[in-house]
Amino acid sequence: MKSSIKTAVAVIAAVLLLGGCSSKTVVESDLQIKDAPDWVNEGTQMLNDKDGRLFHGVGQAPAMGDESLQLSTADERARAEVARVLSSFLKVASKDYSASASRGGEQANEQSVSRQIENLTQVNLTGAKIIGRWRDKRTQTVYSIAELDMKRMKDTVAQLQDMSPGLRDFLSKESDSIFDRLAGDKK
Image 1 (cartoon, helix red, strand yellow):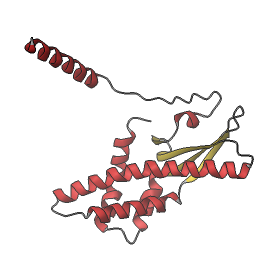
Image 2: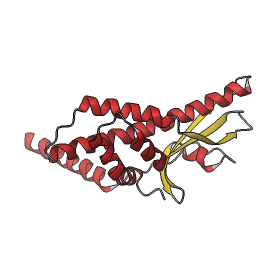
Image 3: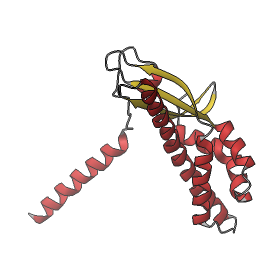
């Protein structure tokens, strides 16, 4: 009796494991707002297209009775989304840098690298620009899209004086390939 239960559990576990390995999760926007620009429904993302390697952040603000406040709120939320995506990208880059430094016999101070990455995120946010807005006529919600391109991020890295030369060189050389790996096939 015990061996048949163990066999059944093993078979179920194997089926679940194989089922999990056999499919790729595809996540699509669930907004599906009719007549909205594509960027509203696609949302925040890393995008590699004809315009380059781009960090896009989409923010929104409901009707507030003050249009200026509503627009600035949507804009700031879009910039915050760019910061979130850029921060995730830079965390991967810092882990890759730490791994490459240790393979080369160097020791990367993780706390120093984290501080430099955080500073780089803040500096780059000043370069994130609002490239579009859209108002949903039905709900009066305003959507804003902010953009930061990889070229601008790399230019910022090259100009930072307080960044370790090893990290600066690594980001200069490897950021495009890291971006491509994280962005996937979104061309």
